[in-house]
Amino acid sequence: MTPAGAGFSWSAIARGLPYLLEGAGLTIMISAVAMVVAAILGLALAALSQAPGRLARRLVAAYVEVFRNTPLLIQIFIVYFGLPQLGLKLSPFLSGLSALVFYAAAYNTEIFRAGLEAVPRGQLEAARSLGLSALATLRWITVPQALRISFPALGNNLVSLVKNSSLVSTIGMVELMFVANDISFNNFRTFEIYGTTAVIYVLLVLGLTRLLRVAERRLLRAA
Amino acid sequence: MTGNRARVPVVLRALLAGAVALAVVAGVAEAQSTLETVKKRGKLIAGVKTDFPPFGYVDASGKNLGFDVDVAHLFAKALFRDDNQVELVAVTSGNRIPFLQSGKIDIIIATVTVTDERKQVVEFSDPYFLSGSLLLVPKASTVKGLDDLAGKTVAVVQGAIQDRDVEQLQPKANRIKFGKVSEAVLAVKGGRAEAYAHDDVLVLTLVKENADLKAVGKPFMPRPYGIAVRKGDTDFIKWVNAELAKMKQDGTYDRLWKKFFADVESNLVKP
Image 1 (cartoon, helix red, strand yellow):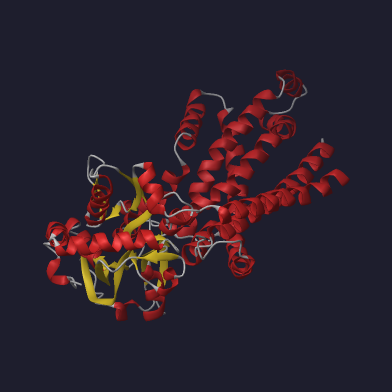
Image 2 (cartoon, chains in turn red, purple):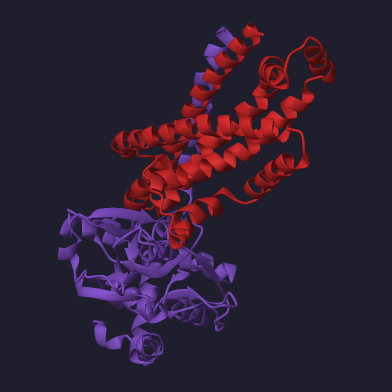
């Protein structure tokens, strides 16, 4: 006996696709904003962790351990469901975005820190002996080299970020994953809808890795 | 550069090939009646809820309890003379039918409201419960029913019928959808939604457990619950119907009703 709903249905995909693409729009938007903010925050914290004195380094390390060692889903739930009980009610978009940013920035901090520490000490000594200030050394000598070293790892983390953004579907954000659930829970075409959704994620990530490759090439040329 | 350009189609081609292969495999599965498979296996695999008191919930020790859970155990007893020969799989309103279709479970005993759309994809038993929908709101709320929800945010669970019902009955409400009952309740408690619409019996039970919430509205759109098996599995659904009829005749159904609905009974519609 064959279930009546069996067989592959192209029409289910055709009907679902416009909604999925609409959802993908929000996925792109929240991922793009989160990427930029998380990259800046990660770089700033990594630089801070190089500052003299233990306090800054310890604070940054504590932040990284807390946000890297807890599931992103818990962070999203704490921001969305938990913080309102303490009087801080962010919109669903800002709740999802801030959780994504803090999670990805924790990884970025470690990635940039590794990059900064991989710059040979001789470079810094040479810069300082040429009369550059500590800040100028950081800006002109350390950071440009650290960025290049960090780039492949950073790219990986940004790809993760795009896929992790699917978790904000749990707080009612109508992004790609949410739309996929919504459609398949109603037409029960699970394979077709999630399959199409997976293809859209692949295309999004392929687009992103392309962009990253261009950026990396520019960085190399600039150096 | 040419290498880069060729990579995209290759990835897509691989995905498509995988998709088609899986679709073919899915099409040829399902050769014999689930009833036979279950008997041979020596165990029934039933999808039940874990967040839907009093039909399917979990106590502090992690034990599954509820009306539907008891029915699953009774089915196991009828099949194997041992009510423990059942594996309970946690399902949600959204994933229960995909779980059944993909063969992860043999049967859904999880508050499935019978609708025409669902009849297209699963085989339903005779009705075993009748449920309307109510609104769960904070104690201090002035909301008295669907009419008051124009322009307000209403939580619903993804895949539950209230998603459609609220869209139809109060199109001016802004629906916010969650995957689980617990998340929708949190949304009301945290002020994320002004109300949460779900089955009357669930809302009434949640009110008993949460002193800061209340149930409002007249139960709207009452519809029956059915037990569901895979489409076309007529042997199995006949067996289910016979067992349900037995339970109603020998007083088991009434016993379960009293056990789980005694304190909300006055608000329910007995089938």
